[in-house]
Image 1 (spheres, helix red, strand yellow):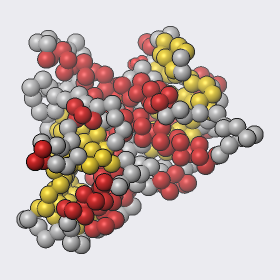
Image 2 (tube, helix red, strand yellow):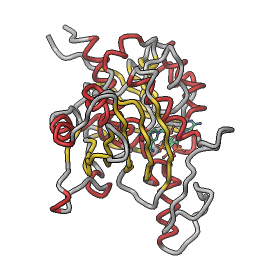
Image 3 (tube, protein in one colour):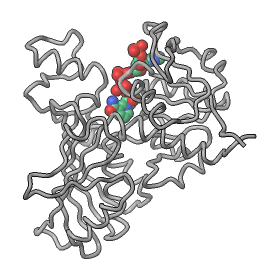
Image 4 (cartoon, protein in one colour):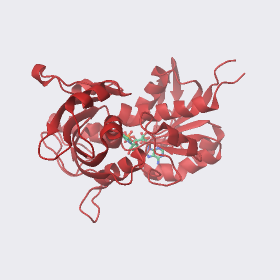
Length: 339
Ligand SMILES: NC(=O)c1ccc[n+]([C@@H]2O[C@H](COP(=O)([O-])OP(=O)(O)OC[C@H]3O[C@@H](n4cnc5c(N)ncnc54)[C@H](OP(=O)(O)O)[C@@H]3O)[C@@H](O)[C@H]2O)c1
């Protein structure tokens, strides 16, 4: 018996997530037989390195996507591209893992974080959604606490890296810190030396779509319709990852020692919680790593069963590429080995 190997398509291959996806596929030794890379026509012919070879990026078209006969298609080119092309890839036989928001709240599409709800992949009909980056890191850290203490309400404020807004977001920060104006700014205001409490568009209720994504996706992934979540999402001039200040109120008595013990052995979590030695998670330390880092765990004395904590992860890795490749690994494990 040999390990089955797959044709894998990456859509959005030249983007911040796409490039990280190619790197993560290689690092985790995903069994790739052939890698096919797609982006816009502008990027056609761009060479990207994988497995010691240079692969030319192709312009995304329905025919080109169908002709790859890919078993996996990892999408990270925005929601409109996913809406138009993910069903094409799925109907041609691929399992699509979609990084965009296009299908996340579709009741027929599993929304999966492998450390939290791996069982959800069994119900997929060709498309599996990767949650929002801020949601992923929060649920990885909160799942063991929810199981132990019964979280009733989550109040989260985010401090999100410019890399979460893609290449243009990163380029705007870099231009502005060098005293220049970005040719095509991503944010509605200066981001250098600033914080912008506005990610994605505003909804009628005053929340942004990014905030509503965190609120809705958390409930779906945790599988607990009673869970209350309120979010404030803020873009900050940082590159290494997203940080979150999270306050939880629970049904059962909480203890800092027990929370630390649970998080020390939680899959995907690294506890960094020794404030006396100035040890707590920071995005500069999370950059390029796959774990979710948790620290600053403390009792909230203002409510009966409250805890506050600080959660940090690299949004391009665990928040996007790594989580997507982990989902593909779960699906590949289901399909097994081939003679
Ligand atoms: N950045 C994050 O932390 C993060 C986390 C989770 C999810 N996501 C999601 O992942 C997606 C990509 O994000 P990103 O940060 O990688 O953005 P990005 O750096 O701006 O990259 C966008 C990618 O999509 C490609 N693309 C855009 N329009 C296309 C089209 N019509 N046809 C084919 N390819 C097209 C671009 O190709 P060209 O280079 O040719 O323009 C590029 O490869 C978004 O849906 C985003 O919401 C991002």
